[in-house]
Length: 348
Image (cartoon, rainbow, N blue to C red; front, side, top):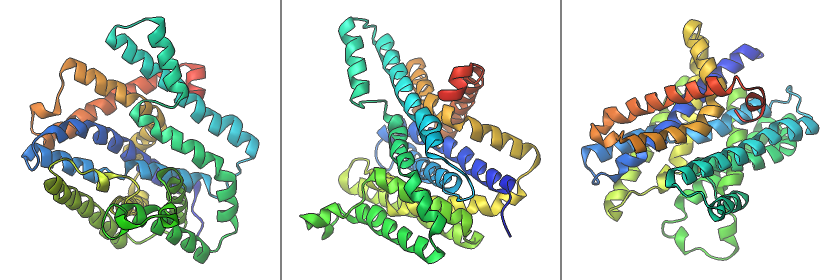
C-alpha cells in the first residue's frame, strides 16, 4: 500500500524533533565530560551523550527520505536557487553572526579583528556546529545523481549500494585506528569514504528505510546494540587512555549507525500511533528544527556566561533539564525570527 504524504511527514517530523533535542543534549554534555573518568557525573554525561549520538545522522537520513523520493520533483534550478542557496546563505550569515558575538564578548572592536573574522569565515573556520551545513552543501550537490539512482535502482541494487557505504564509510573508519588496520598504507587507506561523502550514504539509508520499513523488533534490537556499543566502548577506551575517547561517539562509526537505524525504524513503526496535540507539537518542533540547530549554541554560550553549569547538580538530571531550557529558548527565538520575512525565507 502506498504511503500517504501525512504518514510520511509525521514519521519524518517525529525523527527531526528527536534529533534536534538530541543535538542540544550532545553539546550540553561537553561540560560534563570534564569530570573525573568513571565518576557519577562523567558516566551520566557519557550516557546522555551516547543515547543521542545518532542525532546528526538522523537529519541526513530524513533529508534522504524526503528528497530522494522519485515522486517528489526537484528541478536543478530549484535545487540551486532555493534549497542549496538557503543552506549557503544560512551558513555564512550565521557564521558571521557568531564571529560578531565573539568580538562583542571579547570587547575587541578593532578593524583588524573584524577583518580577521571575515577572513576566517571565508576560509570556513566557523562555529563548531556549522559543520552540518557544510556537509549538506555536498549532499545537495549530489542530489541530481543520487535521485537518478534511487529512481531506477531495484531493492537489491539499493542494498548493494548501502552495503558498500556501510563497509567503506562506516566499518572501515571505525576499525582503522585499531590493529591490524592501523598498519595499512598506500592506496587501501584511500578506500575509506570520508565523513562528508558518507553522509550521502546516510541519506540513501533513510530513503531505503522509509520505503522498506524494518520491523519494530529489529528496530529495537538495532537501537539497543548501537547504544550499548557506543556507551560501553567509550567507557572502556576512556579508562584505557585516561581521557574521553571520542572515536565511538563519531557519526560515521558502526554503533552510531546501528543506533540511527534503530531510532529511524522505531519512529516509523510508531508514527501511526501519534495524533492530536502530540502530533501538533512534533510538527511545530520539526518545522523549527533548522533554526533551533543554528541558534542553540548561542544559548549555550549565554548559559556559560551566567554560570549555569550542568556540573552544579547530578548530570543525570541537569543535562536533560538544561537541554530542555535551551530547546524552549531556541524555539522562542525561532518564533521571533520567523516573523521577519527575509529571515523566515532564507535563514531559519
